[in-house]
Length: 117
Image (cartoon, rainbow, N blue to C red; front, top):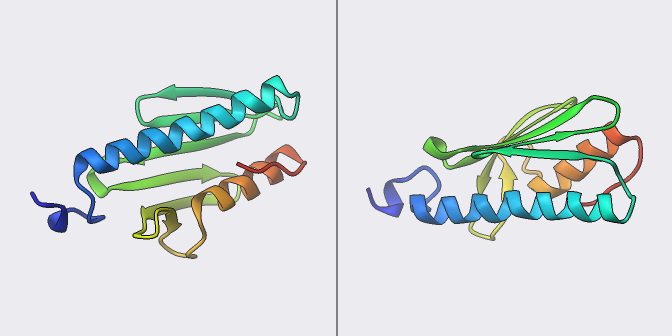
C-alpha cells in the first residue's frame, strides 16, 4: 500500500512515528506539571492508549487508531477524532480544531484551572 492509498496520506511508519511523538509530548508535559506542582495528573500508557487520570477522578483518554491513521480524544466534553494535516498538526474531523488546543481546553475544564499542552 502506498502512502496515497492510506487514510491520511502517511505511511504506516510515518503515522507510528507521529503518534509516538504526540503521546510522548503529552507525557512530558504531565511529568513537568507534576514536578512544578501545576497539576496532579496520573498518566498511564498501554500501547497506543494514554489515560490521564485527574484528581477529581475524571479522565482524558488519548487513543491511537492505526487502521484509520487517526488520533482520538475522549473527555467529559465528548469524543473527538483527529486526522494529521499537511501543515503538521492533528485536526478534528468535525470542528477543525487543533488537537493540543482542544486537549488543553478539555483538561482545563476538567481540572478547574487553565493548563496548556
